[in-house]
Image (tube, rainbow, N blue to C red; front, side, top):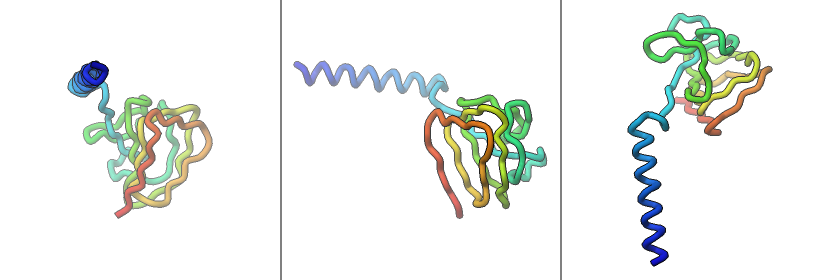
Length: 117
């Protein structure tokens, strides 16, 4: 009887997760660092909530926070100055040479990926 009750609860959790995924509440947008707005991506700059220096594949965006994953890519890294308190879902570094300094960065889903190839 106890096993059956746990199976029922597990089934409800799986259904809730599937519904959340289908509605988009579990997925984050992945934006790529583009400090100069040229779509060449990467390099040094200031990460602030007011600057449109994040490329979503279609347009430049100002950082909106924890619903987004930050990707630092490009041919060169650089110094990134954090302006104020920022938050992100995950961070991916696909290019070496980046440093983050100043400000505060909170990771909602604390994963930092290093993908150099």
